[in-house]
Image (cartoon, rainbow, N blue to C red; front, top):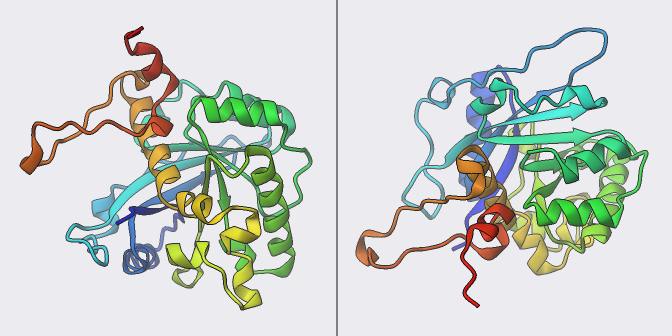
Length: 283
């Protein structure tokens, strides 16, 4: 059974709404979700990076995922909306409080820097406006080689026809540049009604209202659309874990009790370049 993930549930100070979001995600079949803290610095006023609230303070008891015996996994994520290079602080101690780190560049120069140099896990694509730049193949390929993923959020397409047009247009341009690989589809949901199940996101719907969240409309094949809510998300989580420990050179995993002699290695697609360089040459 595939492990489906939604790595973008919008944070809200209203605990009941946040609990409802996590409950709905578990009911829909997601095994992992990430609560997203949005940080948008401005030049006029200095802002502090938010501090994530412990999951135990937000949710008393995690719901059990439908069809599984274990509860849903909840991560903390920080997304930095960048309109200037100074907005990203590579040595900020506050970043270490989050499980996932994402940036949303607003200019072509910042997009290129995020793809090639920034030590992050996810690069977000704006879906609320027409992008002022094109996705060039070189930085997109560079981000893929570094193990980064690009995120497209679909909930805005459910709220407004104009936002739907921006979402589809920006997503199609991105998919065309990266050939459907290294993409994750997330909800960025603020309300439980904005969440869709993993198969609802990837399957074909006859209803026009559902077209905006259909993976095929974004230019993704059936296989790529399923990967965008499962294995590609898992790659982002693994990248975050290795980024925060030993620069991605060492990866540890618990072995199954019934097959302790077998060790499972992370998929090749999720392995960081540093880990590949650390392997001895067998030739």
